[in-house]
Amino acid sequence: MSLIEKLQWRAAVKQFDSSKKISAEQLDNLLSAVQLAPTSLGLQSFKVILVQDAETREKLRAAGYNQAQITDSAALFVFASLTNLDEQFGKSFIDLVASVRNIDRASLEGYEQMVLGTLSSRTEEQKLEWSHKQAYIALGVLLSAAADSGIDAAPMEGFDAAKFDEILGLKEKGLTTTVIAAVGFRSEDDQYSKMTKVRRSKEELFLHV
Ligand SMILES: Cc1cc2nc3c(=O)[nH]c(=O)nc-3n(C[C@H](O)[C@H](O)[C@H](O)COP(=O)(O)O)c2cc1C
Image (cartoon, rainbow, N blue to C red; front, side, top):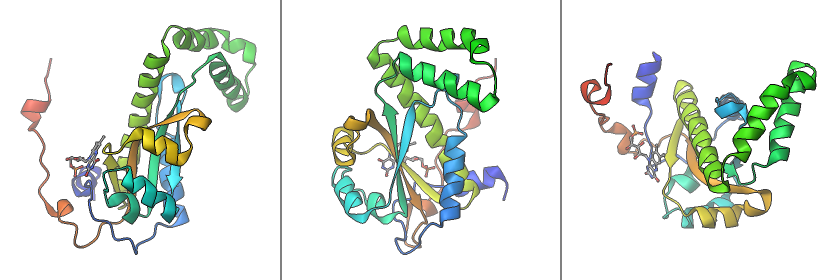
């Protein structure tokens, strides 16, 4: 299948086959894709919590409008944004760049000033909004990577973020829930994935200048 055919195949599955487990290799492949997602300035100001524990997922389902995908998928990906993008966060990122590329940290002075300047010029609210956007890019990469591997991934915004934060103890970790994705394999009974995709025409969607 071509990538476009795989994207035609993918669907926001509502009914997962809970008997189908995802292998460690398949899961790790998806994690690699999320890890490689691009982010603004490369900061990756979010974390992804992988929830497979059944009891926790029952609680999350109650906080997610009782959506069955939360408990019946093989794994739940919770994208959570960092709430404290302070100077230390910016500096530690520059440390990472210097160490990964094995370059003198002093040569990154300009880059560091840009990162720190960007962080200090924004309010806490603006930085959180910014982080949420980065997490959504990672979600998009996850959806495409899953489709590429024949794995279902259902993106979801229908949940109470404050309750998710509480159940997962995210506040103490300096995180807050952005968006989630249920990952696994569709049930043969899933009707949604059998429906024709509804998309606006290219004429409506794209403007050529
Ligand atoms: C960010 C985001 C949040 C979504 N939230 C939910 C949700 O909470 N529950 C749900 O059943 N579907 C949810 N959807 C699925 C969309 O309704 C679905 O992607 C859209 O109708 C297109 O269908 P398709 O993904 O199968 O092509 C969400 C999709 C996105 C991208």
